[in-house]
Amino acid sequence: KVNVAEPVERAFATLEGLAQERGVKLKKQLQDEYPPLLADANRLRQVIYNLVHNAIKFTPEGGNARVSLEVVDSVTLSEMIKANVDTELPTELASESLLLSVADDGAGIPAAHVESIFAKFHQGKEPSAEQNMRGRGLGLAIVKTIVEAHGGKVWVESEPGEGSIFRVLLPNLSRKAYLIRTAEVSLERVRLMGSTLTLVILKVMDATKEVTSAPPIEGEMAKLLNLVAPVVQDTVRLSSDRVEILDPVRGVFCLLAEISLENAPALLQRVTYNLRKKAEQNTRILNLQLNWGMACYPKNVSTAEELVAAALKAASGTQAKVIKLERE
Image 1 (cartoon, one colour):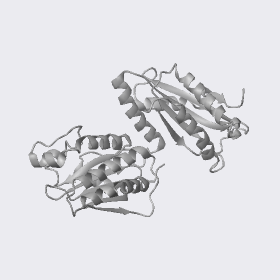
Image 2 (cartoon, one colour):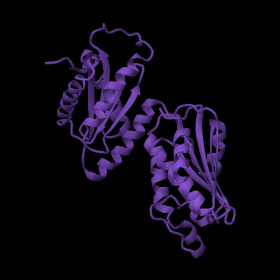
Image 3 (cartoon, rainbow, N blue to C red):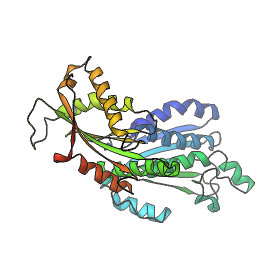
Image 4 (cartoon, rainbow, N blue to C red):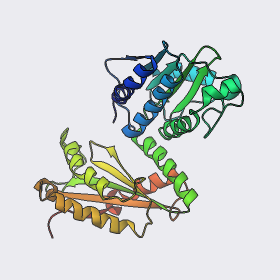
């Protein structure tokens, strides 16, 4: 989980020099604490960086670029979204979500361009609009893609001559809902490429202890995941392949890889080999086993939701396959 205040602070640290060069005052309003958000930290940094960079770029000398991050309830968000986006809230929305606002003192955006501003390579047709829009298009298209992959919404509130406020809703999704969203983004890619996507669900278990239904000691499984998950991430070969932690208490994580069902066992063999190599520095790994199951698009399923459900089922109970990490 991510503390969203951290990527805001990093964006400020990176862009303070640019703001000073342009004579723009960079301001932020952050609370002392925020609920942790299940999200991709690197992608969130990209969203915040793009929005703050644009705010600085389109604010005239002597103006302000402002960033705020607040915790808001679903009722407040529903009213804001209906007023600006004409859409409903995500059904997976938690009672508390985060609202990021990035404001500038620029020329504003004409009403005719507000709806299309998030389209790739969008340019204003009028000279004044084109000057204000130049350079925004591709960055905002990326912002929209990332935010929606997290189950969120992004919109702009603007009037010509009065600046703009970009709003980003970051919902607190359940881990399963977040995985479905992540799988949907990967599925869009593999459909375009005509390739395959395999989801492997893995559960870390201590092979030296009896299996019970009781949850493990608090913090114990997180330590085991911190040993195993990075090794799995380093084993995958494509930058688009992902490792996500689903249940840190029970040691469940997943691997989403653009490989066929037939090639997945070979990948798991490489994972096993690398974990045993890691055990040369930490023998604790030798006491572990991985229970796993998987599903593949398009061989087994046709949607992201079906992919997640099928993989979870394959990894549960007696259906799960087992990798033991003791030395051979």
